[in-house]
Structures are given as C-alpha cells and as structure tokens.
Length: 106
Image 1 (cartoon, rainbow, N blue to C red):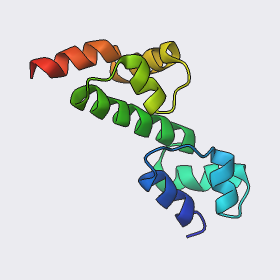
Image 2: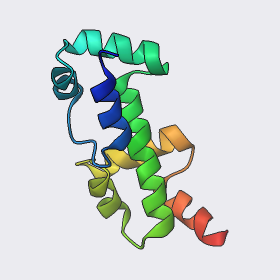
Image 3: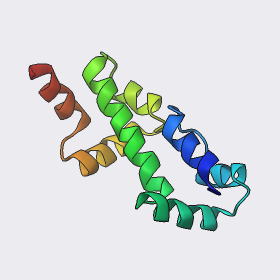
C-alpha cells in the first residue's frame, strides 16, 4: 500500500507531532493524494484521525494522572488550553474537568 508508512506512523506515534504534509512526504506522495487515500482506507481524514487520537490520549491522562487540564493540553499537542477545552467538549460532550470529575467517581 502506498501510504502504509504514514498509516503506521499515525497508529504508533504517541506524540503525533508531524503534520499531514510531513507524513505525506514520508510516503512520497502529495498531501492531497495522501489525504484522499487515507480517507478511502479509514473513512476519516488524517486531520480527524490525529484529533481523535489526541482526544483519546487526553482522556487517558485525565483519568490516570493528576496533571492539570493545561498540562494535559500541552502533553497532547495543543498549544492553547482553551482551544483544547473547546475541542474536547465538542468531541465528547463534556469539558475536560467534567470528564476528570466523572472518572474520579467511578
């Protein structure tokens, strides 16, 4: 598969620091072609996949650490904690702090 290296990177790199353009370059294809092939393969765009992975990483950190929401935002690759909070709530339906409190009860 042409984009196998990029898919493997997205599935295994916990930091997800490379941009989609850099991942496409790793696969020796254009960014547009990589995005099209990735969506055919996974059903979602690479950007959505990366965001989903970052939110999942944040959920784990919220459940398993005592880090602040700001620290978790940085850990997950978000430079702005308020942007992270808005995205987290949009994707999960609850704020990061609300999520953390709900997992503390369980």
